[in-house]
Image (cartoon, rainbow, N blue to C red; front, side):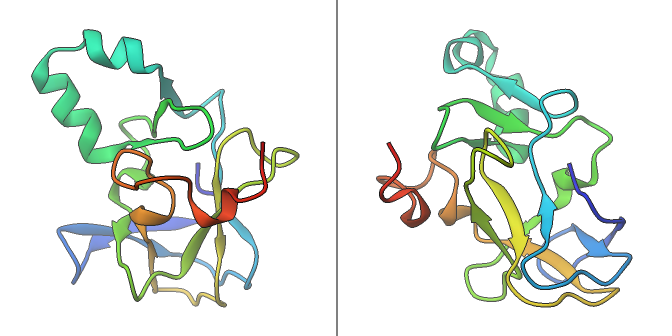
Length: 140
């Protein structure tokens, strides 16, 4: 769930994207998993789905490197439109169990109104990343 006001607009990266509607300070927590709002699906429940449902989930979800669950926002959530960039990402994944049971995203830099919010999927999605993310080194 985004913790700042955002809007969905056309993106120069792909289709639609998420854009800041207010300034966001560097190091601010911008998005975090909310178990009362966001969806988590066990690997076993994911495997029981038909191919069409799996394909839809893969478009908007990631596999958590901490829980192994598929994590994704509800249908009406702007986070479904967060785009990927390996170089221009202004959000980065971090993990602190005192803040969230799942990885969350902080602003790498100060973000101004109108800027697109982007993440590097390779930082946190265990379905595409080999091994543990760098930020998990030292965690048990």
